Length: 166
Image (tube, rainbow, N blue to C red; front, top):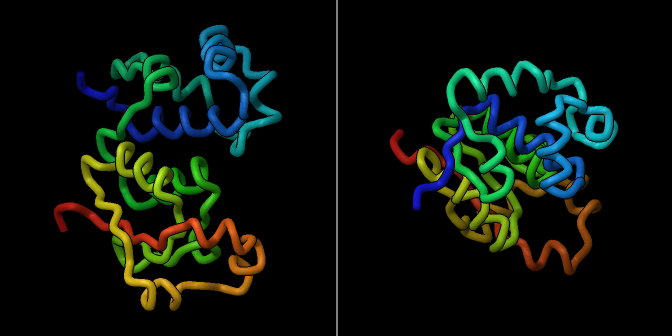
């Protein structure tokens, strides 16, 4: 069975509404009714135009409901979309939690489960690779070190994300 594939605008809509923390069926119902009052105070990016993105989904046939229920992958994802995904899904921000080096992202600290999930979302175009520990140490910043507890950071693996086909 193939995974549902979403365009960038619809995939980022899904990621944004999932940040609300509401149950999936509640999110789906709110989006179906186009009543976002329950979600908007809770989502990471409340300025996102939900109506426009739902219309895009309808226009191009992106099945956002199935994606919310069963998971999905991006059809295509540019570097800025990837950075937004990292922020929505994992609360990781460029220059705070990782470094951008042209078309790759380095020193991202993720758990094994997060790595697996991320690869399932972006694997058509991007590769998530474990970094050498010495290289990852270069990307550490004081703010990140202070914000993470010892046990939390010890279970994280430093990774690099790069294009499959440079």
